[in-house]
Amino acid sequence: MSELLVDFITSLDGCASGEGWPGWWGLEGPEYLAWLGEQPEVTYLMGAKTYRLMSGFAAGEVPGGQDDFRAEEDASVDQLTRAPKVVFSSSLEDPLTWANSTLVREDPVEAVRAMKENGSGLLSTIGSLTLCRSLLSAGLVDRFRVVMFPVITGATGSERIYDGYPDVALEMIGHRTFDGRTQMVEYQPRVLEHPPLGAPA
Image 1 (cartoon, rainbow, N blue to C red):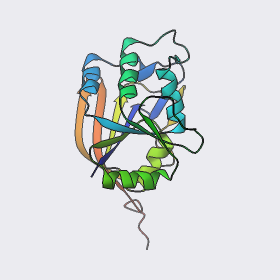
Image 2 (image 1 turned 60 degrees about the vertical axis):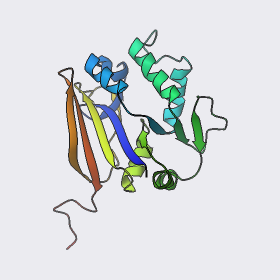
Image 3 (image 1 turned 180 degrees about the vertical axis):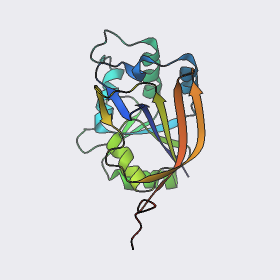
């Protein structure tokens, strides 16, 4: 049976990106980059928006405000290009142009449930906030991992990750600090029917 990891990189205030900020908020350090390179083989799950963005990077499109990719960003995109990817979309058309990408049109929750039951190895989301929310709400997520970078993007942050989420209890199963500033926390999530003080009478 496969294991499903929801994996986010965020600002401290829970935003996935911010206008005018480079990838990793420009704060990726050698320890963090080395840890990224040590990750196990994984099949990535994503929606159409993330696919369009990341496949554009793979094709050489540079994010706004940058003249070129930094070496670290190039290496990250190359790693994603080599990895198997499953893309859930009703708007994209086959064949997908990004190497090692498979298009799935069926309901993502049911498709991922079948992938978990019939597969092996690690499944991991990348970006795709709506997809992650759906998979978590359905109780399919085994591990929930967040790497928090030491910035608050109150004025420029976008893609607030947790808006629309159910209430979730989190049991910490791992944590690490990279480069003396960036914090990784990993949890086993449990979706709650109601908060502790909100039980039906």
